[in-house]
Amino acid sequence: MKDRGGWAQINVRPDPRLIVGGGCGVADPDDADLPANRRRNVACEGHVIVRPGGAVFAGLEFRRLSTSHPAGTVRNNHLNLATGFEF
Image 1 (tube, rainbow, N blue to C red):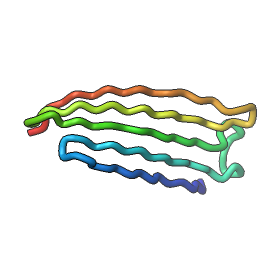
Image 2: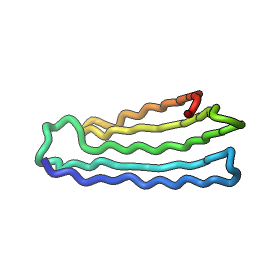
Image 3: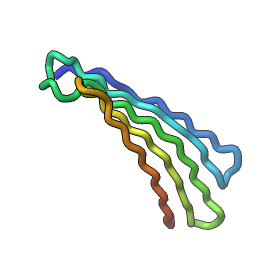
Image 4: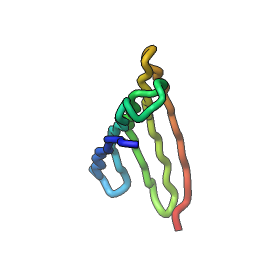
């Protein structure tokens, strides 16, 4: 199967306790290699990670996904919240 795609992302750390970033990616298979049900996938996201002190962190991400089909495009959104402890 022939497939073209990629992902680009940028992260910025304006403060040692904060990371802000975003990225987008695409998967675009050769239509001749596929059954006629999927044409292209696109995903974009934005995220924030906060490290208030010590090993504790919290992150928030919003992601939008879309898949193109011959009959139209289907989209969905994800909102993710994560907390953790690094050691």
